[in-house]
Image (cartoon, rainbow, N blue to C red; front, side, top):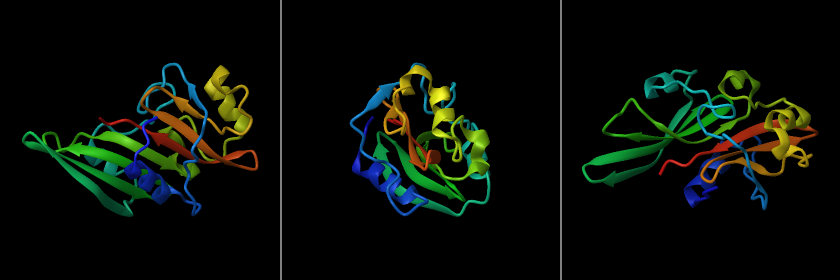
Length: 169
């Protein structure tokens, strides 16, 4: 997991409950086949940036940073929808393409975007994660690969927020 101050700010801003959804965990568990986008555990998002912005009414589009490099720029921003915040990196060379830098899902209405969602029980998530989560009764660990992961904010045995952290380079 690659934690940066910008990611910390993103995660703090995405919390629907007034506190940072990312809890620094000493435990990161390998999840075979994990990808932040696509695959068995990843986000299921539109392929185009325009499609992404039309998921629902966009409440806010917040510019985080513009990076310049060798004749092109990458614009990093957070897209705020009701119950969903998605961090993206958009290259000037392909403005309708994007990379996901993170996402926080705090409402069930987004159940089609990921296999994990608010309202699921800890046991349901453990079953989806398989052996990696067998001994994590509170879902306190993060699950993923060397560069990206998913973690959970849990209250009273149910997921209240799903947090994806994704490497964009």
